[in-house]
Image 1: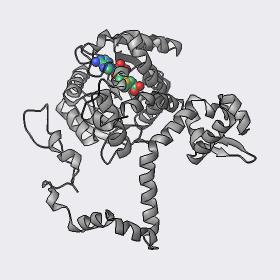
Image 2 (image 1 turned 90 degrees about the vertical axis):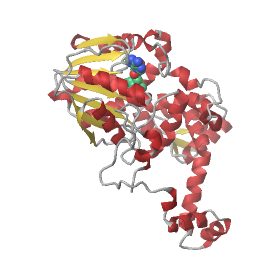
Image 3 (image 1 turned 30 degrees about the vertical axis):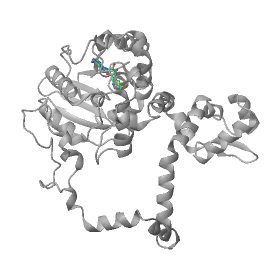
Image 4 (image 1 turned 135 degrees about the vertical axis):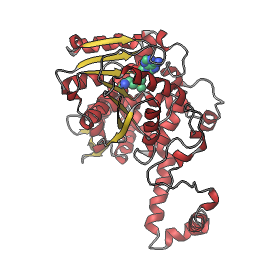
Length: 404
Ligand SMILES: C[S@@+](CC[C@H](N)C(=O)[O-])C[C@H]1O[C@@H](n2cnc3c(N)ncnc32)[C@H](O)[C@@H]1O
C-alpha cells in the first residue's frame, strides 16, 4: 500500500533542487498512486453499510456483530467525551490528588479535606477518576491510587504537561476557527514565543521561563529512551542543539563520565542551563553557547550532535536551514541524533497526527514528520546513511541516527 503522507502533493520538496514530486518513497511501495476512484468497491460497500442507520440497528442486535458494534460505539463515545476525561485528570493534578493517595487508601472525607473540596464534590471527582483508572475503590468508601494515577506519580513530567494543556484547551474551544485561522493569537503561541518569532535570541528570561521549565520536567522520559537506543559513550563530545536547560546533557553525562558536553540554545535559556549543570556538578566539563540556531554558526568540536524535540517545532524551510547548520558543525564521520515524536506507521498516529497536528497548529508552526521524510531531509542537508532506530516507546520519541 502507498503511504498517503509521502505521496501527498502538499509535501513535495520545498527546498531541494527544484524537482517536484514526492519527497521520499517507502521501500516496497508502488510508483502508481491510486486515485480515489481506485478505492476498492468492497470498501465502498462496507462503508456505505456501516453508515446506514438500519445496519447500525441490525449490527447491535445480531450476535456476531454485536461485540464489534459495541466496541465501535464505545470508541466513538470516548472520542466525543475525551475532553471531559482530560478535565477530570486536570482536576486531579491541580488538586494533587495522586500525591494525597501516595501512601495508601483514604476515606472520601479524608481526601475531601486534603484536597480542599466538599465531601460530595470530592466523591464526584473520585468516582469519575475511578472510572478512568486514575484511582481505585478501596472498600468501605475509601480510594487508593489506580494504575494510571500511580504511573503518573512515577513520571512527574506528565503532570507538568497536563497542567500546561489548559492553554491548548482554550485554543481548541473552536477548532474550526483555529483551522481557518480566524481566531486571534493562540495562547500556546504566546507560551512558545520563539515559534515564528522574528528575533528569538532577544527573548527575555521571563519569556522563556515557563516553556523551559516544562521541557526540563518532561525531558527525562525522552532522554531515557534515546540513551537506551544509542550508546553515547563511544563519543568524545556531545553538542545538544536546542538543548534547553541541559536535561539531556545531564542524562548523557551520567551514561559516560568522560563525555564532554556542549549546549546551544537561546541566550536566556542558556543561563537557566548554566545553573542546572552547575547544580549537577558537570559544569566543569560543559561549554554553553547562546544564539539563534538559524542565524549563528554552531560551535565546532563535537563528534556527536543531538536535536531532541527541536525539528518538529519548525516549518519545512526553517527545519532545513537548521539541519544544514548542524551539518556544517559536524565533522566527517561524526553522528547526528534526531529524536522526536514521529508520524506515519513507525510512530503513534494519535500522538503525531491528532495531538501534535492540533498542538503545533495552535503553536503557530512545525509538524510531526514521518521518519522517511526526516531521513530525506537529513540527506538533503548533506548527512549520510540516516537510519531509524527502535525506541521502547515510539509514542514519546522516535530516533534517527545519521552520519556526517
Ligand atoms: C521544544 S524545546 C526542546 C528542548 C529540549 N531539547 C528538550 O527536549 O527538552 C525547543 C528548544 O529549542 C530552543 N530554540 C528554539 N528556537 C531557537 C533558535 N532560533 N535558536 C536557538 N534555540 C532555539 C528553545 O529555546 C528550546 O529550548
